[in-house]
Image (cartoon, rainbow, N blue to C red; front, side, top):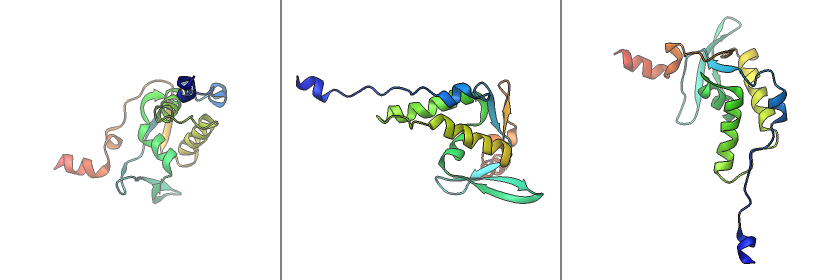
Length: 140
């Protein structure tokens, strides 16, 4: 009797309706602009906006998407990995996690132009593999 009471409910991956309907789900995504660490938790991306040098900082999810944009996983795989992190910590994935991540990815692609979508796995350009500060030290 008490065993049933204290048993943890199994948390499962939600059905991702927005992901299933998305044309992006099978696309690979890749970062295309140099980046570096701003502090221990935040990065910045060096880009140009209206032909002016710009330093882009991001909230948590856009940064996670950018750092995961290695050209080796699909949008669908990324969303399932993100959901699994919640589940591994005994929390259900947010109800509209897929829609939120797709929206954030689209902003990185279409508005900021710091991530691109590809139809096949693509290797990163060497200038975006490592943070800029590590590249300077690697060449010394």
